[in-house]
Image (cartoon, rainbow, N blue to C red):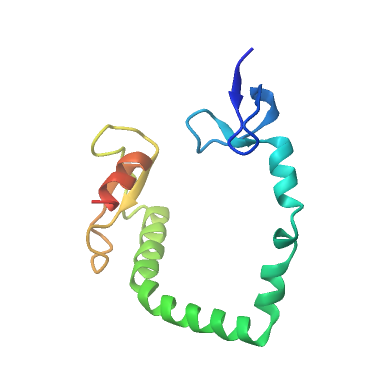
Length: 132
C-alpha cells in the first residue's frame, strides 16, 4: 500500500487519504483530506473576501483593477478570439505540436498583432516558450 506524508500535519497516511489533483506529479494533493477540510472551515475562508468585494472599497478597487487590465489584455483577447473563430471556420488548421508532435496542441502567438501567425505547441512546450 502506497503512503505519503501530509504537508500540513506531517502524518504518514495511505494515498487514498489525499484528494486527487491532476496538476501534481503524484496525482494527489499535498495535504490529506482531513487537513484540507479543517483549512476550509477556518474563519478566513468563510466569505471574508466576498464581504470585502461587496463593500464600497472592494467594488471600487475591483472596478479599477478590471479597467486597467482590460486595456492591457484587449489585444491578446481579440487575437485569441479570432484564432478560435478561424479554426472553427477551417481557415486555420489545428496542427500537432511543432516540437514533439503531440496531437493535443494549443495555439501560440509570437506576435499578437498578427492573429494568422500561429505556432502549434503542446501544453508543456507552450509553457516553456511563454516563460522564456
